[in-house]
Image (cartoon, rainbow, N blue to C red; front, side, top):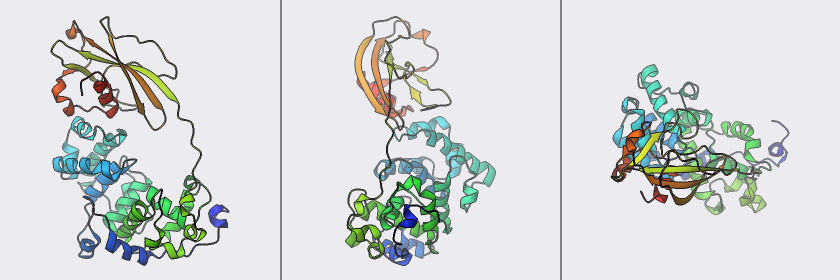
Length: 357
């Protein structure tokens, strides 16, 4: 093991995997994609499609936000074959509001690959899953462990926090992630799927970001952070780079009937293939608006939206088009049916500013 803060700390006791599993058997969260430990003990197998779908949706998104999307997707597309056969546009519509829209495009591509290359059956190993579109190291490990009990370390944000406290890790997690993965790998028992989910649940409910309930934790006897008396100081926070601000304009165009003009964004880039109102480029300096055509444009205020890497300020303008037939790049949408459009939350904010949502 490299000479890092992890190696230099007094060694914590090895994780007691059986204590973790015993805790999980009593306290496992009930989630729509999860097979309970009791059912798992009765040989009920987790559905790899549901595990995969939930893991993709949960990337950088909370369980509370994901559950209604998961239920909607599995109602519309109960199997991976159903999802693969669906038009991408329909998938994007149902994903709208969940964010990180590349996930939706990769989701659809992955479903097609599973059907076309694997006969509709997900690979059963992390190595096999890694060959599929949109599946990385974490997701492949999670699916393989939970669906097929592959004895592989599953390291998500909750588990990283548990380990950082257990080991009193003195550096940010991202600087020791491979060490943590290697350490966790040595602890994985035969019930690999239940173990992975147990550690996730511990991080979500007991070893939570702002409150470590050590007296309820099965890992407390060997936890270095608990022994030190201040487990909440871990994980050590990494320095955050300043988030720049970009500026632009959004143009809400109506016809005399109140329908709104929409179009599809470019095939690549941020929010690719999603639906938008026309607008300017997003730049690091403020510029005066260059309207798509001459008209009685009205200011509708400003919307602010925060992406992962930058903050966006859009000035919103609206107009009633006198010659709507000249707009040919997009389509006219009934303002009463905007829920059926693949509008990300940014452009729903734009429409709301213009009084349409």
